[in-house]
Image (cartoon, rainbow over all chains, first blue to last red; front, side, top):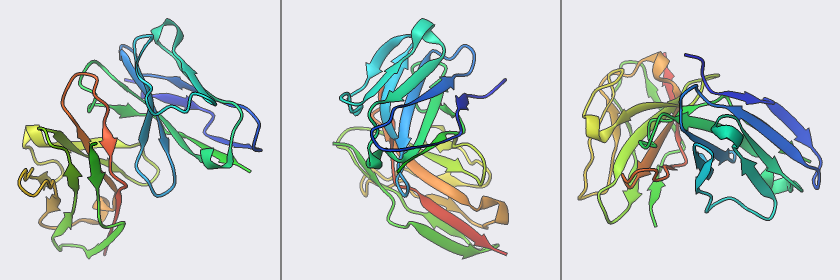
Length: 114
Length: 110
C-alpha cells in the first residue's frame, strides 16, 4: 500500500509569514495525526483527527496554528504568522483505527523560519 | 503527567557487542510502552510494543513496572541497527495520544 504522503518536503520562510503543509494518509486510515519535532526532541502531538473530527488538539497553539481535515481524508496544517521557534520537522501520521500506537509516518516537512 | 525519558542522546557500541537503550517513564497507571525506530533517510516506524512480548530484528524490551523502565536490548549489535530510537508511551485508552521520549542515536561501529 502507498505510504503517508506529505508536501512540501522543505520550506524556508521569514518570521511573520504564513505556511501550509499538506498530508495524504494511507487509504482507509480513519485517524490522522500532526506532530511537531524540534531538533533534539521526540515528536510532539499537535492535533489528532478521527475522520474529520478533532480528537485531541490540546497542544496546538491555536493563536497561530490551525488544521483541518475536510472529507476525512487529506489534511492541511497552517501556521500564521510563523515564529522562529516554529522551526521544526512537521510529521503527519495515520492509523487504521483506535489503536493509536500503530501509526504510519510520512517523510515530514522540514520548516526553517528565519 | 505522563513523561518518557531516555538518558542517553548518543550511544556507540562495537559490532557484535550487546546493546541496551534505556527508557524510563512516569505514569501512575498501567501504560502501554513502545519503541519506534528511524533509520537514516527512512520514516519513523514502530519497532515493538511491550504487550506483544515479541522479538523484532533481535531486539527485545521488558516492561519493569517497579523501576518504571522499558529498556531495549539486543545481544549482538549489527551495523544495520544504527538508527535513532524513540521510546513511547500511551495510557492505553482508545484515541489516547502517544508521548515520545527525546530519542537515542545508536551508532554501531564496524
